[in-house]
Image 1 (cartoon, rainbow, N blue to C red):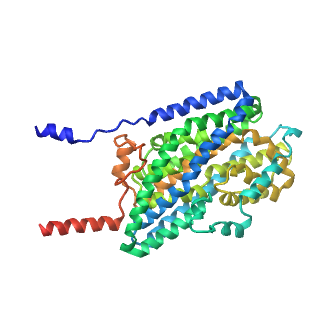
Image 2 (cartoon, rainbow, N blue to C red):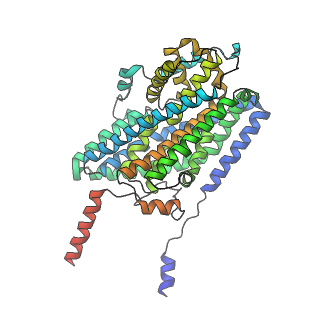
Image 3 (cartoon, rainbow, N blue to C red):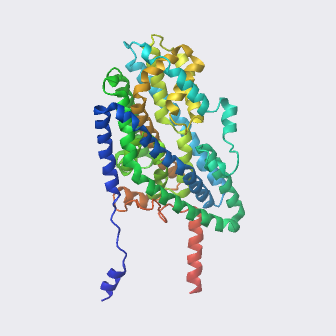
Amino acid sequence: MATTTDAAAAPRHKRDKTHWLYIAVIVAVVAGIVVGLVFPDFGKELKWLGTLFVNLIKMIIAPVIFCTIVLGIGAIRKATQVGRIGGLALGYFIAMSTVALFIGLLVGNVLHPGDGLQLTDEVRGAGADLVSESAEGAPEGTTGFLLSLIPTTLLSSLTSGSVLQALLVALLVGFALQAMGKAGAPILTGIGHLQKLVFRILAMIMWVAPIGAFGAIAAVVGATGVDALKSLGILMLGFYLTCAVFVFVFLGTILRVVVGINVFSFLKYLGREYLLIVSSSSSETALPRLIAKMEHVGVSKPVAGIVVPTGYSFNLDGTAIYLTMASLFIAEALGDPLSIGEQIGLLVFMIIASKGAAGVSGAGLATLAGGLQSHRPELLDGVGLIVGIDRFMSEARAVTNFSGNAIATMLVATWTRELDREQMTAVLAGERPFDETTMLDDGHAAPDVEDAGDQRRELAGAATTR
């Protein structure tokens, strides 16, 4: 009888219906390719559907970052721990960006993808247009970059679309609540409820993904066609292979040595996020889900809340590889190859510039044009050579950036002992599936050390009372 009662009282596990959503995305991508090839003019007119979906995601990114970071910092008793996590993450990001830079240089110098190509008048002038876009979207110089971090008002940081401004304000609010102690607890509770609301809205937006994927793919295929890709196949193939080697071999080895898990099983766990990135050509569409999934796999809230948003601005491995290879490609296609000294000077400048342009639509191509204009203006016309395939290369950039940030989060969590290994093992084995409905993971993240100590003391006190 008791068994029957317990069975009746046990809550039913809801069936995950979101797998239909991602099947619909795949179907939409295939349909978009067909429409772009058969009806190219009509396909180009559907570009607004992809823009609509990406804009919906961007609308929710600032609130997600704000809530996640504030709650993460609020859960830590000592401010020094936040500095330790952030400092370790930034040091790792700088090291990986440097490695990605030199890998791109190495592959570009070995493949020589621009040899034998002829620049036509049709592609000239595209670079100048992109320079103007870069000037409008990205701040000028170090001073401009620092000034761009400060929002007009406290609340405007959540509406300006700048990831770095939202990050700064969230850090300030988090530290302020931390200093308030118990008086800040009600505010943290309110922000926790706000986070649940934000993720619910995100779950609703995700159902528009098939429509966005259809429009985005149809537009790019309609605009470029198949012939436009043939002469640039070497560059695309070399770039894709370089990104794959960087993620699976280089980062995969580090993940195995430090965390002790297989890179393929870890990236399989993020499979749905990769589908979103490929269909939208933007890693930003998966940022909120990456934070939620990192917490679910066992990373503590502070680490997930600090490392992931920071990595989206400072850990652009795919962009680094792209800028190096694309610059070498353009210089060789124009018959004016870069010397080793010019390569290092120009491309280090581009890596720094890409940090300030983070969050700007098409930042990779715009930063490339801006860098060439600043150092080698005579190479600017060559940017038009890769405009046609930049959409396809941006997918590899976004996937690589996303993979680098996900792996970086696991590494920092391991180094700071903020990773729940029992939860990680169960999640990667498929025993504890991610809740696609709420995208929140209450109670699964690794607890703060001091919080765990407080819980043990409370239990000991309760036992003494008894």
